Amino acid sequence: MPDVLKAPLVVEFPFTRSLGPVQSAFLTGLRERVVLGVRTTDGRTLVPPVEYDPVTAEEIRDLVEVAPTGTVTTWAWNHAPRRGQPLDTPFAWVLVRLDGADTALLHALDAPGPDAVRTGMRVRVRWAAERSGAITDIACFEPYDGGPAQPDGHCGDFADPVTGIVAPARLDYTYTPGRAQTAHLDALAERRIVGERCPSCRKVYVPPRGACPTCGVATSERVEVGPRGTVTTFCIVNIKARGLDIEVPYVYAHIALDGADLALHGRIGGIPYDRVRMGLRVEPVWTEGARHPDHYRPTGEPDADYDTYRELL
Image 1 (cartoon, rainbow, N blue to C red):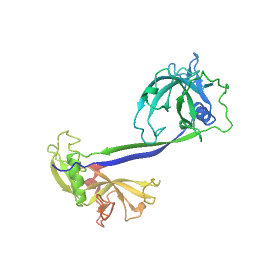
Image 2: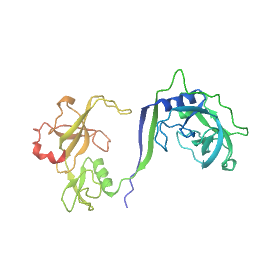
Image 3: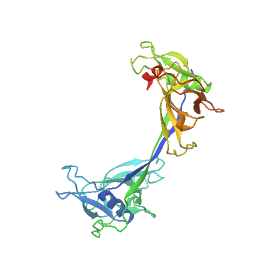
Image 4: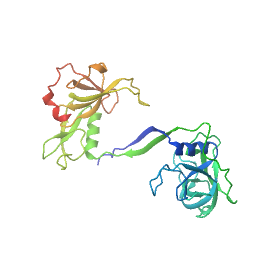
């Protein structure tokens, strides 16, 4: 039984968005240690605020300050905090209905253990020492024995409002390839490119998925393809990717390997970006110790005739 391949993978990017007047006031308020909600036409106060009434879909902009104290409506204990969560010690996720609000806000509660948390307990905001206009300006909630705090009645007007935020998005997961992709990866380690042929339509797919995407039947017949191929379509990349040591501009292309019926992705090198073209014949370039081609370069052959790859665009 061969070893099961697996690898940790991370998908990470900064998500940048602009803020409308309601969210701008809410986040700016947190920076100034003020919690703002929005009042609907029927008198409900929503915290966190939204720009449209979830019941009537009417636009709402009537901002109103609520207290930084409130009541836990429900909770769940987090015994193993993950990277980027509000606290690095075990805590409770809580829904808190702040005094003066009709809806609950999700955040963390700093408590010594699950026995110290209950529905109906009173809590208050613990503000972050440094605040920038983000939900993290509320460091967490903490237990509180007092009555409702009295807000100052702030209307939501600020001299230096927050107009946009950058929220980092990250997904950590472990990828385990199946039988077909394991064989493909093992072949790449030997600088060979292997796909699988469909027993029905006889097309060869690279990389293989273990089933034909057209016929829906299982594939098992392995076929070595390439290593040369033809550029079918391509794009010029002008924005440098974080963590990728490749100077822009560069070309990323669909490449139909000889003997394959599905084009794969690859970077084109060894040629000026403005000379890459459809039909260009290319071959893989491997670096020492790599498990896959670093890029593809021109072979010097005449360009392929369009009719030989038009079905692979």
